[in-house]
Image 1 (cartoon, rainbow, N blue to C red):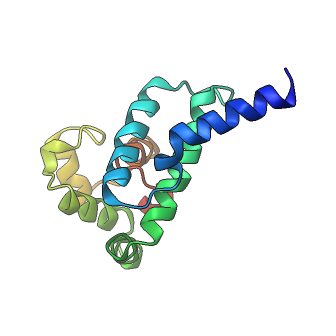
Image 2 (image 1 turned 120 degrees about the vertical axis):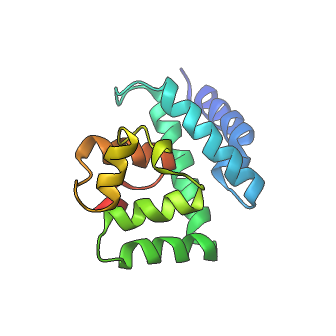
Length: 143
């Protein structure tokens, strides 16, 4: 492989992915969220999987876009300032996506979600991993 071949491939990729690598509006933001969800299902857990590199680039772009949007900044600030940490963030996400206790299979049954929301049970590592993937947020939001 030559530098020219690699450069051409990179430029072609950048041209194709430009709307997702430099998100400037809500429609591209939504497209990036949908695409990353699909890619997460297809990518393996192996770091060598090239899809994981693309997921990282798109995640970074989503984060950059959201950090510039007042509604996302306000949401994150509210979630981080609540005393019950992960549960507060989960409540905010449920409100934002209009979800009920039966809409979170990542945690388990409706009664399990209820116990988490009332602080009778804590979110565990698997819950946090699944929720952060579903909502495309940092796992740190739930701590």
